[in-house]
Length: 449
Figure (cartoon, helix red, strand yellow):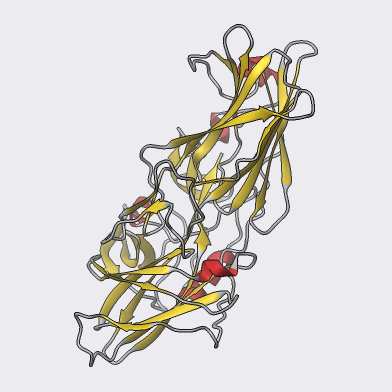
């Protein structure tokens, strides 16, 4: 069976400051008008995105994570960047940008923190959501410009089609679960209360075809999702069939779900799940499942994928304990930091480290320069503090050098100080930081298996 082939959009495009972008300048009312430290914020869209999405609300937090104020970036015409500027006292700041301009479909706290949650408004269709975050330190007399490239945090369930539906079927629904229910200002998805999306289909003019075009925006799936097709019959109980996907459904992609129901000898449901990045073309990924995947109307049944004896099917086909990543061992050529067996996800550590990174653009370029493990479509990222504590504590983690390493601590770029010992490495200190050339980058990447 083919794996998901997700065409990723380039993680970060080159920053282009458009001279004719209009700027909105405002002073913090609580600060002195003589404050000389000016922060200019430029928000960009990535190639292929709607230029209007560059307009963003930028939330400023001080070094303690306390909310300072909100700025609205502004752009003229169809430019793909927008800007605003503000005068601030010296200190460290975290910036969280939310776009596009209309965020009325989300519940956003009036005075948030970097870990405050953004949730969809109940009863409304979720709108588009792009986000970016950055940290900056202002010294007395500084004038700094921060470039922020907005990245989409939602995916689209575009179309659903089930073909060759039996004549006695009076209703068809397709459910996909689980999806993240919310996201924090720092860009971290909320694990609690995962959501199920259920899409009712209607009979098409073509006999036996049921379809829907939901164009529904949702947060990414929490791990590998399960797709459930349910038939309601004219007589008797509903019948349901489940399929476990081979990989997570990720942000900035559009997905089409298509299945064909056949019953020559026994019952088989086969079809395809296709996807496209926002600015790319569709790719079909076939899947098969049969009566071994059937569940009762009460929801019982394994739902674990195709019959292993058939040699085809879901994510468990052909895999055993030896194929799964193990913490502290090597998988796909990389050290395994952590494993979530329930969701069949893991975090892998890059084999090499880099330094001489002095700004956000260089960090972005460094992350995309790392080769990805075979079959992995996610992007490399800066590890969290908890992930650093895991792989630094293992004396057998390859390639650890004494020094300072970048990490994310509660959504803020930070660095940890690491010493090497005989039996263990030691994380001695956590420092909130901007970019320093001597600090090492050792990124991690999220995978499914």
